[in-house]
Length: 387
Image (cartoon, rainbow, N blue to C red; front, top):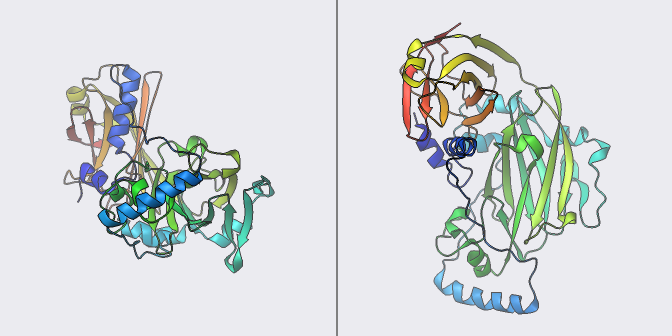
């Protein structure tokens, strides 16, 4: 079974490890440390004739020094196959909870129709997939799988011009070309790689916005035709059986022009069921060793995952950067859900909550928990819990 750090290492450029997020939040709360994300560099709004000529010269030079990389031979990697590739064990459950393109299209509200000058809504052929276009790309929502806690979206982004090279918004143009995960793209920056192909980089994204985007993650796979399969993962914002997911599709060469940010709604259906159990008795050693007073643990199980929510007090805490883990009877952490291994940490009026997301284990018997000091990378426990 992979450790927490091994799992986040596998995530590569997709999103920051949850422990790092917890550290940043803790740091902000204590105002004792600060971290600053590196700038992704300056993006120009467009290419002048001089810039295009310079780019052609750069491409000629880079063609000698950079290998001509091929796109990964991944076409039409559906949500179920993608999640299986990322380590999801029960993809059948995902299949059962998927809203197809036809369902998404059928449930589109009239308010989702856009009327800007260059952003348009259309229906993509017989499959009824919901598609939006702006100046740079076409964004097609393919599938959505959700339960009462998690939403997975799959989309395809296609450049509208062969001169555009799509770059996911999680990667800056001055980052190493290897970040693109394209076979052979091992040297230079993303912008240099695009120039070596005779193309202009365009940053793109599609996914939910607003509060639900907090703690979300994105992943991508390039297709042979230059399009991109784009995956967005976040928390279900409502817990209702029918939800409205506020989304945006964005394309930019620098500043985001209003016409190239398309806002729309997805009407989704939660087909899952859930059972929940609350525990309020905890091994006294947890408080003795850490000073963290756990008052409640809720375990919620759906067809997709096992969601643990810890409620605790930190008045007498001996550690900082507090996070939690669920362990099996052998003291091993459960397998995490792809891209959402750690959930949110919220502090309010001396009462804190921490949510962690796991795949459903073979048995719930003998489950334990650990308290982690993320600043010092120390685990305390395991500790038992009961009703």
